[in-house]
Length: 159
Image (tube, rainbow, N blue to C red; front, side, top):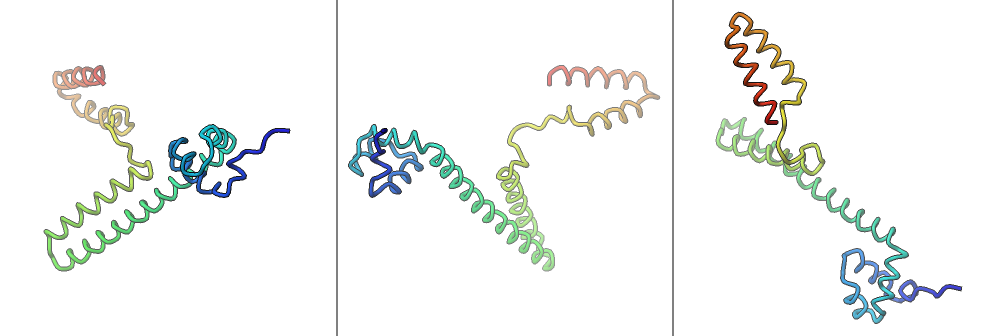
């Protein structure tokens, strides 16, 4: 019959698992609670899934709280924008627009809708349409049209 885990039966099991979730070093947990470092390691191994889920849940809860705070800031910025527009206070309105935009940007990053980095418009279907319209418009000017096509080819080769 396998040995019973000393941490599972420890009176401070919840505190030990909380420390594991926070990522506290095994030796610090073992010193604080009077169990061996090996016991803490073994305990983590057989409860790793629960510890991982708890860590992820804590991260989601923090992100949800942050998301709600940013949404509230955005509401306040939009409210101030409305008041500034009614008062024809254009400086305050512009400041409120900047703040609302900042909140939108942060919300986009938090929700994953706005990925940091460079946007490549060359792969956009809208760019392909626009490019076709521009090239078509230049048909009466074949020299200019050819220069544009060559320049676009250069840009595409660098992308």
